[in-house]
Image 1 (spheres, helix red, strand yellow):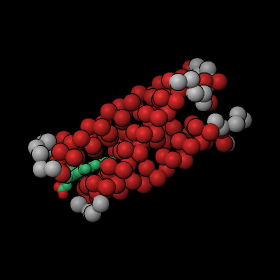
Image 2 (cartoon, protein in one colour):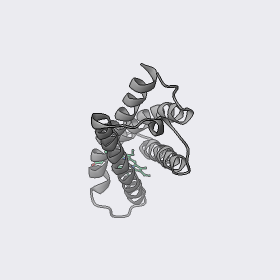
Image 3 (cartoon, protein in one colour):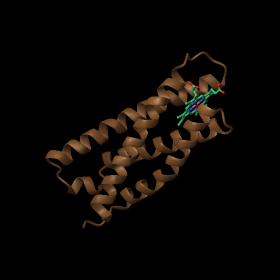
Image 4 (cartoon, helix red, strand yellow):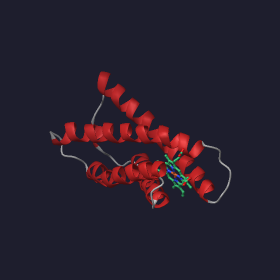
Length: 141
Ligand code: HEM
């Protein structure tokens, strides 16, 4: 079993609190609970910092498990699907954040904040769980 790279362990652990924040943000938006804006903004900012940070790290030559790995077949398809979902999530996060800020400032943004967050929420979980599943099966189990 390969030794997990520090960056992969860091991200796998650092995303766990985001899962709770995302869950709270989604439910609180729906149920009109308090602190919706806080948990939503922190969840999105934290997640974007992790994703963009990881991309920059890899772009500047940082290595993680994926670079020693030469995925083929099903594993390659898994990585491609995971990467495409993660990229879509980043775009949706930025959009939901901007629309949420507009909404809270009384600006018109139609129903798009609520509608897009209903797409973002399940997609975020797919991106999160496929990433965590790979980490667990490849490095830990
Ligand atoms: C993970 C991030 C977020 C998710 C999943 C989320 C989700 C939601 C959902 C499901 C609703 C209810 C929409 C509806 O009833 O159709 C909502 C409402 C709202 N959200 Fe968010 N949201 C997030 C972040 C934010 C942020 C960062 C802000 C502002 C800075 C914000 C501001 C608002 C406002 C002002 C409403 C309307 C609440 C009301 O009418 O009482 N949201 N959000």
